[in-house]
Structure formats: structure tokens, C-alpha cells
Image (tube, rainbow, N blue to C red):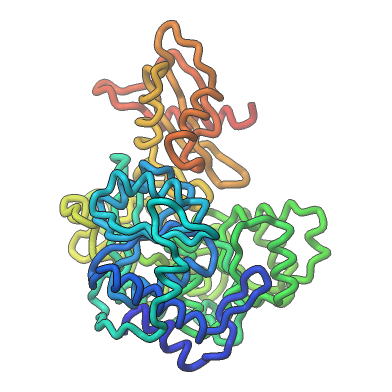
Length: 510
């Protein structure tokens, strides 16, 4: 079986059933499948072959789903990208993956075309737009005219399905190679937890970005596997999304803490009828217990916090997999996943002791694209070394304590200091810079930069923030900048980030 088969089989079993609800318009599984077939046939007509990589620069609209499944049906590999990326970020991923084509939407066409100019192997940019875009192919003409029949490409579980790019400590994004079998395994592992299983009667609220592995596999693929309906949210806004949940009687919510925090701040929250919701899953950051209690009260539904990462397709743990919900933890391992807490030498530690969380299972990636050294460092003897520090209690529930690496988690998105620092260094007024996490009640964490100005330079914090926003995605940019005469460093010149993190916490109230 392969991931493309999920849609093929759902369309065969539930042809007239609603697959997608978007802006109050409904798309049946049969129509969804036909449109995905058109994408597949169009790509193949352009010369895309099995194993070729195809970029997707689309937000939460039905076209993303059609593109995703069309690419997979053609036997090609999906390379999803955050729509907040700038041209340089898209170009790097397209060049690194060797993508042959890129599917995008009108608002992102300038970024896509600028990236294509730097990626020689990227031969086709297909844009869904109301009018022709110079330098690009029209989605309506290229895809709309393609056959609706299944392309018939033979695809097996060991074939590569998705290259999910995740930033690294060097600042260079790494492509996590997720096989069809990895994605299918995680769907099954989640479904083996009774509370996490979606059924054909469910209406699943999808506000998570589909280009992120959580929204993609846990939200989209998981729902299609069981023929549920997807209430697709183009853009998260607290009041309209609450109205949508109430109107369409959504039954399952896959979300992240910033969404629930935003909802909790709506003054009229208790005026909405959310009792149709039978289950809520959240991940990517810690959920405040007060917010969790509020939504359990409003919906009557259990809320399961979980943990995972791109390299594990993504889920490793979930509270729903345990005998009860234990707030503050990410739960025990889900079925089919084995987890250990180990010391620096890889030795398993007793319960209660902090160490690195490592995991293994059929959902673990095949490695990093064209990065054998990084793969060898992360995958050792069949175990995925997550880089996250955690503890395990006597009931088998895990708590994430800290990150071994310096990654910052902004609303569930990974931000690595090195990339932001290198951007700051490009400004002519910056002599030295270091970036750390800054506590943020809404996003979980935001980016804070400590900057040393060059002599004679009077650049402002806003000047540097604006400069970063012109270079990298907004969520990676510093929200706050503190100017300092020098950075704390050890004898070898390494920045003491722990000291800076303490300073950031102390500055939180100022």
C-alpha cells in the first residue's frame, strides 16, 4: 500500500461523501480523487518521473490536498514548504532537493519564480491564478486539461513519499526522508489508540498548516484513511474558526496550544456551542493547564497532549495512549513506538532521571536527504536520537524538560539560532549577535536577539527586526532585541546561551 492509495480507496468506498468543507463549499471524495489524478497526469506529461521531487508552496486550500495526492499518485516526492518563506529559503530547498517542478498559488508566485531563477533543475512552476503569470504555467491549462483517470504508477511502501525540511543547528535545512511506509505506520499507530482513531462520521477541524507534518499526516492523511470529512481552515482567526466549529458541528480538533490560547481570550467564548467536539489532540508546545481545563469544560471532550517531530512522521507519544490524561506530560509511547531515556553514552536511565529521548518504530524516517553524516548522528542502531531532554515517570508518561539543541519553538515551528544570527550578521551595523528563546504566552516561545553594535553605529532594534523580516520568514525573526556591550562567552569563545536565556527570562516583565 502507499499513501496515494488512501484517497483512491476512500473515493471507491465513499464516492459521494463529503471529503472537504472549505469556505462552506463541499467537495466529495470522488471529485477530490479526480482532481488529484489530473495533477498526477499533468506532472507526468511534463516529464516528472517516479522518484522526482516536486515542491509545494501552498497554504490551507483544497489545491494543497490535490497537489499532495497528485504528486504521490505520480510516484513523485512531495517537498512541502512554509508559505512564509522568502525566495532565498525556497530556492535553497528546491536546489537541495533537486525539484523538477513547483506547484503554487497566485500570492506566492513572485517568491516561487524568484526561487526558480536560482534553481536550475526546477523546470516548471505551475501557478493557480485568475490570469496567466509570466514565466509560469497556468494551473487551469496544465492541470485542468489533464485526464481524470488514475495514472497507474506502481508505488511501494519503501518508496520515498515526502521530503520534510527541518532546520539544523548549522542553519541549513535538512530534508527528512519520509517513506510511504513511515507515514502509513504512524497513521496506524495513532489509530491503535481508541481515542485518536478517526471514523467516517467525523468532521475533523483542520486549522494546522498542511505543509507541516502534524497537519499533513495526523490531520489530512489520517482523516482520509477513514473517510472522514475535513473542515479546512485557510487562515486561523479565533472568532471565525469558533463559528465554523459550531456551524459544521466539528467532532475532532487537531490543534496547537497557541490556537487554544487565542480562543480562550475571546470574550464571547462561552456563547459558542462546542459540544459536538468529542476529542481534542494538541502538540508542538506545552498546553497551559488552565486552558486545557477550560476547553474540557466547554466541550466535554478529553484533551490529549502528545509529542513528536518531523523525523518520526510525527507522533511518538500521546496522553490518550495511557490509562488517563496526565496534564503537564506528553503521555506514554503510542503503540508500535519504543522510547528510552538515555545518558550521553546511550545508556538507559532510571525513571525520573533526565536524559535524551530516543525512539524507534516503523514511523522513523529513512534519514536526511544527501546528508550521510547528519543521518549517522541522528539514527544510531535503529534509534532516532531526538535531541530533546526528557524524563519518564513510573507510569511510563514522558515529560519534555528542555532541548539538548538550541532550537526555539515558535507556535510549533522550529527556529534555529544560527540561521537568525547569520541574518543579523549580514547587517552592516552588527558586530556580534546571539539568539535565544523568549517566553511568549501566546506562541509558547518567540525569538530574542542580543546584539553588539559596531562602533559608531546607532541602528535601532526596529531597524534590525525590519531587516530580518526582509530576509527570512517572519516567525523566525526576533520579536525583541537587546543591545549589549558584549556577549557572555567561555574560554573557547563559545557563547553561553544559558546565561542569555536567564537574562531573557528576567527581561520578560520589562
